[in-house]
Image (cartoon, rainbow, N blue to C red; front, side):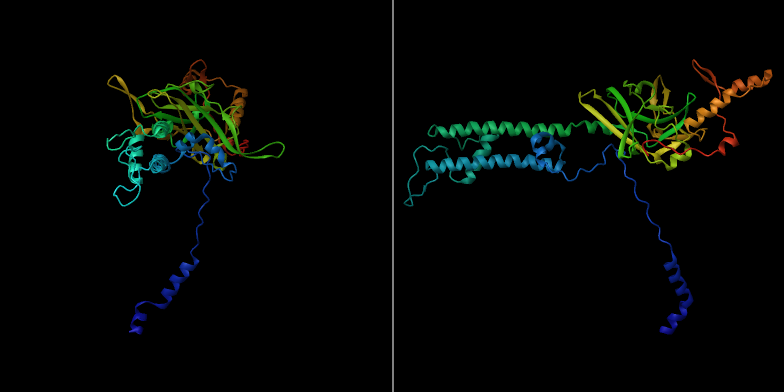
Length: 414
């Protein structure tokens, strides 16, 4: 039998399989790059080694609201149970001191008083039920206080006041937790990727924002920051240096946007931009993060909300632009959100804005050659019409320019 099995599988074949398994190279997973703000807006920062934990108890309301739902519901339940048990103990001690818990069966013990402090209170269980009835004002009618004990009246007033305070705090926490502004931010969407493409003759970094709800965001404003590792002139290393990125159009200079339909927010890459030296080749090697923040007031609730997202350098597409999503149908504008994040490739020079301006400056100083009538018409057709500026020379990426060495992105965020 053993010899028959050996004939079925050749020995050299088995050895070859073992060699292939041993010689197979092991692929190492690339380390996951940390990001300051994730795509859903949560800040990826862990606070450790906090010595003064008592500072959280100085603002109990905010602490309870910031907790997870399971912890909030646990505190909600325990606050009521503890207050009921506390006053149940007080009612039981009051009845015990007055003698209402003495033997009623005639077993030789002292007889209870004729008028008890609390009627029908015979044990701790009945004291707990009476505490619940007092605090939540159920009033079944079986147990009630009498005029025999003035101290019982004071305890009744104290429990009512404590019950109102507990109700106000716990109900306020639940209301604030269910109506948090970040829940409204779930319907504010950002494009999955940002793009770099020419716009009105200028190289721009663009991303798209939109609101899925019909209710407006009043005073909506957008701001952006570039976050990355930087080194100062003195040699100080800043792991998360934040640089403001100016935005073009209504979103710039602290203005508000009219977010009825999706908008494309652009940042002009010029001499004042931290991305001025960035090129298409340098974008693949760059290590920075563009954080985008959208703020405004919810129209229906009046609560100030904030939506956040970020774009890593690997999530910025060079030479792309967003496809249109708004069209006119039956006398009104329609938005197709299935194309919200779609992009198309466009003719974009791989040079950075700095090199592009240098090439345009050289083109302006070149001697102009007079053209004939037909050739002049062809040149005019190739121009791009811009309001107030006339014709703009199209980008000229000659083979000589392409062979030039691209400058490495040397922003402070690297």
